[in-house]
Image 1 (cartoon, rainbow, N blue to C red):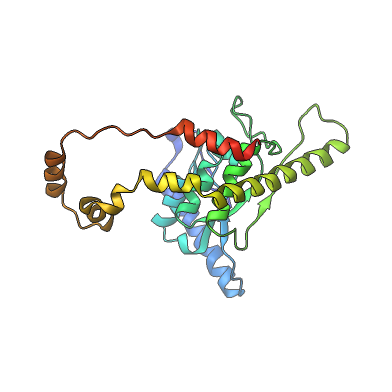
Image 2 (cartoon, rainbow, N blue to C red):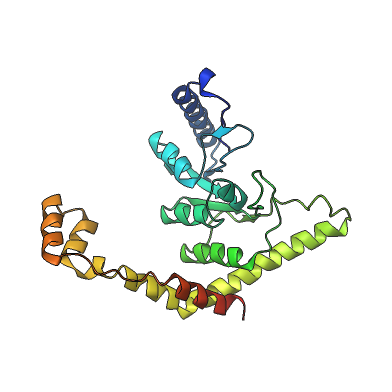
Length: 251
């Protein structure tokens, strides 16, 4: 499924249109249950096209829609990285946020041209991006009933029939290599340990644990801040993270 959107607010009732979309999805859910169909539906975020403003702008917008209308138990997201870059994120962003909330169902394995403002559906050939996406899929234990769908097109100048073979083979190789590289990164565990260390104070300090458990009060946080004083800045070490990743990808 895709949510649609609008061209101008002058002639649009957004709430009514979202209500109608949710009503249609509820009819589809009722129909599938009556037919004995047990799989989840997939909803695909897209920031523009065919409308100027889409109601399913990105993964977080789409998840908010599903939760607002009580549809989250019957849907997961199909993420197209090309759409994610059109929304202003890196290609792996929507895969990551959907996975974080157990809403990642499938991936349209294409990519876009970040210099162009439309849906180009390039074959994915960037090993950095495929590795990042496969890391997320490994962490969540696979895609269950979903998969990698090559929703791609050759470029305008690629006019020979063999270009279709090169595109599909090259893209499958990029994801296969990405899977191998992601498995190596996960196996070594260095990046995961560094991320865990970055957030360690939330697990070991009493105030951090209480905030995560939802039992801390604002007054407690104020008293903690007064007692501790100005926090000492700690490096995010982005360059080190990138260097460790690159050692696995490009060796």
